[in-house]
Image (cartoon, rainbow, N blue to C red):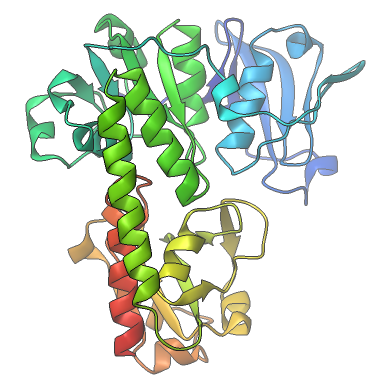
Length: 362
């Protein structure tokens, strides 16, 4: 299956990202511009940034455009819309993830999971035997090898999802690009439960929401209690002052978590603080000079979708522009398995334990 061209869709249009931003949008946070296509023909334009979203007359009356804009913003850590059409505001208000799609029915017997963390949540709840398919990145629990695979995590075959007739799809808006999935499922009228946690508390609430949707509330409460016990143990084990930490999600361009991300709490539980944790957004692109200026004491490479044994600390150590980064020069760059640090689910606190061990060793 080819990766879809569009970034999001409604019943009327598919939004294809443009390579060049219009001048008024250059410099706006996370700005993207779109051609709105219908049957392969461009019928309109749109532009989204974190602080404002605009659509032209072709989409202003489209009932699906509010969902699309909310999903785009949520996937980048935002929870407030500033959507405008040619004649003024369309929707300018905070929103909750629970508002995005109608509530899911309980006791779902046929489940599809569309993020590795969602497969792990279902497994922790003890009902992975209900899962009939998942996207290609899921590698836990071991039973994922027995279910149908639907394609890449940011581009699964949504027509196949619909054809499988699930009672519930557990989707996510935890990273940019996932808006394609949530809007695509909505257009196909596939029942879904959308998760988009920004904090450990959000993860726990999502586990409870999922357990309720699957009719196993007691299991949800038990998983959350176990995670809380792990959190308390990590706090009790902390020693010494907080250490400045850089966590890298991608090397080129360099991406790292910002203020609106659960990673900050994982770093804090490990005894550190994110050197970019005050910047708004769930993920940020940073430059080598900014990292040098931030002066982390410890660095972790935890690249999205890259297996632990393929993570290369020397990539950061030898990167152009980081010649004066003390942590790199002094051997304080460590691998961190993205299976824990990048998946907001029951196993995520293992990332804090591994970071804590690295911080103590340095």
